[in-house]
Structures are given as C-alpha cells and as structure tokens.
Amino acid sequence: MVPPQLATDLQLLPDTTTISADGQVSIAGKTLSELADSYGTPLYIFDRATLINACVAYKQAFATYYKASTVRFLYASKAYLSPHLARLLSGQGFGLDVVSGGEMLVAQRADFPLEHISFHGNNKSEAELELALKLGIGRIIVDNWSELERLIRIARKSQSRPSVLLRVAPDIDTDTHKYLQTGHASAKFGFPLQSGEAKAAILRILQDGQLQLVGLHAHSGTLLRETRPYEECLERLLGLAGELYQEKGWWPEEISPGGGWGINTVEARQMPEVALLAQALQRKVEALYPQLPAPMPSLVLEPGRSIIARAGVALYRIGASKDTPGGIHYLFVDGGMADNIRPALYGSQYTAIAPEHIYEVADQTYCISGRYCESGDMLIEQVKLPVLREGDLVCLPTSGAYCLPMASNYNLVPRPAVILIDDEQICVMERRETYEDILKRYPI
Figure 1: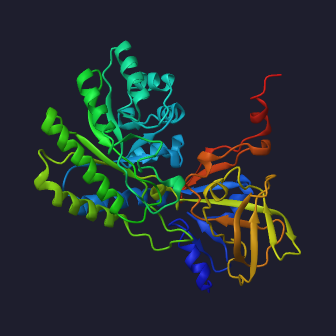
Figure 2 (figure 1 turned 90 degrees about the vertical axis):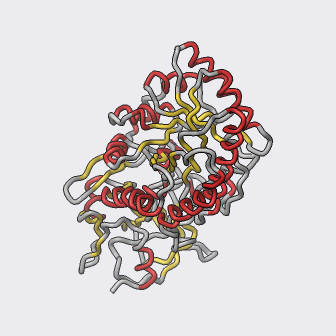
C-alpha cells in the first residue's frame, strides 16, 4: 500500500502514471527505470495523454460555461516548446503565443499554421519584427512606444499591414511572487492604462493607419489561483474599448486577459478547475453586457503552465551523498540549477519520489542538491524519502513548465535529453547535448 503522503505526491504526476505490485513506477506503460537506462539522466519525460487531456479540459470548460463570444486558445510557448509539441498542440486546435524569433522558427519547422501565432515581447528586435512579417505571423502584440514606431516604419517599408493587438498594463494586483506579476502599473510590459498611454497609443495606430489594430491584450501574472485578476482585466480592457468606440468608432475584434492559470503544487494542492475561470468570465461579461456598445469581442486565452507542467517530470540519478555536522543529509544528483533554475530564481518548491523504492517508508529527510558550483543549487531543501544510495533514481513531478526553457550550460555541462511518450512510441523531442555541441560555439 502506498503511504498517504506519497499518494498525495503521486497526484502531481502525469495522468498515465501507474505503480506495479513490485513497486515499478511507469508513465504511459514505460517504467522510469527503463527510461533512465535507455536515455540516460538527467531526463525530462513528457506524457502525451496528459498534454492532450489538459487541452481538452480547456476546450470543454469554455464550450460548456462560456457563451458570450467565440474563444481561441494560444499555448504560451515560453513554458516549453519543441517541434513535436507544436504539432501536438496544432492537432488540438491551439495556436501559439511566442516571444522570440527562435520560437517562431521552431513553429515553422513543425509546419505550424503561422497565422495562428501571436508574437509577444517587450524588446522585439528589428530583425525579429521583419521575420514576423516575412513569415506571416498572425498577430503582433505591440508592447511599448519604441516598438510601435519601429513596427510602423518596418511595415511601411515592406508595404505590409500587419494585424496587431495593443498590450495594456491594467494595474491589477495579483497574489503571486513579484517576479510573476506582470500587470501592475510599473510592470515592464505594456502601455499603462491609468496614465492614458494605452489610449494614446491606440489613437496613434488608428491615425497612422499602417497597422491593423484588431484587439487589446493584457496579462496580470502567472500561477494565478483566483479568477479576480482575469475579471478585472477584462472589465478594464472593455472599458478602454468603450471609450475608443465613443470617440473614434473603433471596437476590438479580439480581447485577451492573458494566461497564467495555476496548477497544483507542493504549496497549494487544491487548484480550482479551469471550469471556474470559464464560469467567472461568463458572469463578468453578462454583468458588463448592458454597457457594451457592440457585441463581445472574441476571447483569447494563453495557457502555458496549466497545459504542460504536470505532463512533465524530471528524472535524476544520485551520484553522491553527504551528511553534515549540522544535520543536513545531502543527495547530490546529476542535474540541478542549470536544467531547473526556478527554485534558485524565485523559490519554487518541488517534491520528489524515489521510483525504485516506492513502497518503502519515507523516514529520511534529505536536501536534494544539484551538481553545479553554487551553494544555491538546491532543487529541494527538505523532502522525506526512503533511505537512498548512490545510483538510485529521484523523480520530480510538475517539471514540465519553465525548467527547460531557462536551461543553461552553466559549468559547461551539456543539457539533458527530452522525450515525449505514449503507450505506442517514444519520441526524442531534444537529443542529449554533447561536449562537441558545446565546443562548436568557440572559434579556435
């Protein structure tokens, strides 16, 4: 029988996770031990079924509870992107929210429909904007005055009229880490609403005419666990649109309160279902509808973490251990902050399971530390596990979002392999990096 605490931790693992009578932990029918032996460690494993189920949950929730307008979903690529993943998302009817030329080119390599992509970012380079126009990216989200003037100039030179949304900083407080707050008045993203800059930027676009302004966008933060920021965001964007309609007759075709819906984590294991968000936005639009001068614009949502985080796990192998006079029992694994900077960057918390000792009593408190030459390279500062030894595996659930995209070659260590699995096949989404890959960057 699985101990109660472990049973709770197992709920953070992918949908297809099973445990055999002899204690073998499997995802999509493949044991973690076999995957580690075949593909090495560190290894990031993504479960196709969990990804698809998350997409379906969004589509079903909004089809059931949100009737105010049409809805489009754009996956937030910064959470993690590969060609295999882009094709999977396209098959689910999702578009992409990208933030760089690299993400655009990954989508192109996957034959993703580029007209279903929105290009975000607070400092898009001239080359990236030119690339977006050349590829026919569907939407460019204009973030600041410098970018607005740059895009107008580039579009005029190329005799194109790209479709854009204006990103607004709606000045909304969110209950999340300060690094994850993106919608307050002093945020690095978007035109401030309260100062009148957002309205002035809209007037500039309408007056010039080179860009086709199709909507308004905002993003309040990420790892959000309540609907209030989305509701307030929607209300403020529609209020701004109402002013523009009265003055200029302009009304958005699209409106987006962003993404950022949270997931179950070690700190908060009772994340509401996405249906709650659909219901809340429907109620908000119903309350605002008498004030709207035109039909509700199409709603655009940008989920990222809530699509991919639980689908992915990180698998490490213990290389050494150490007991200190201060009572800390270290397990040193073959990855760490270079493949998952989140604990060091903003205090993200993880739990761990020992997939080869799943039925053993977890009565040892360990600190799981990475291999990198930083005292802050701690994946988990305290976790209870069975007695573990060198060569044993450690698995960290909910590692699918924002780990690999922020990975580095710190200490010139190659980055890990990444696989996508289902009950029929294993696809290598990223091959394990080699020393040769690293050395190729250095001219001799």
